[in-house]
Length: 90
Image (cartoon, rainbow, N blue to C red):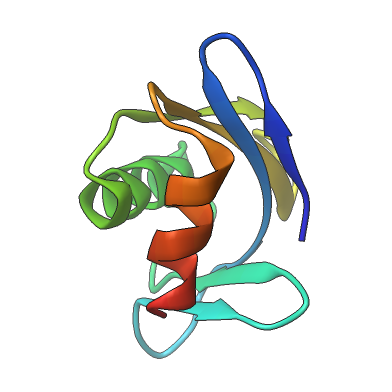
């Protein structure tokens, strides 16, 4: 799992699996987000941003991988220790 601390927050690499049975976030060697939505018109991206914002209680934005299953998201105004703490609770 990769974190990159920036001046704006923490960049986190995630993997997304669309068209799953339920919405779920799993942490193994990497963060995997299972989404019910099909990858049509950005629905999966909006769901990923919404769920990660809810989880971290910070604004989250996808910064790369908009049309890929592997994405990089920016968790604003946080640090690596806080991200690790939230992910440890998964």
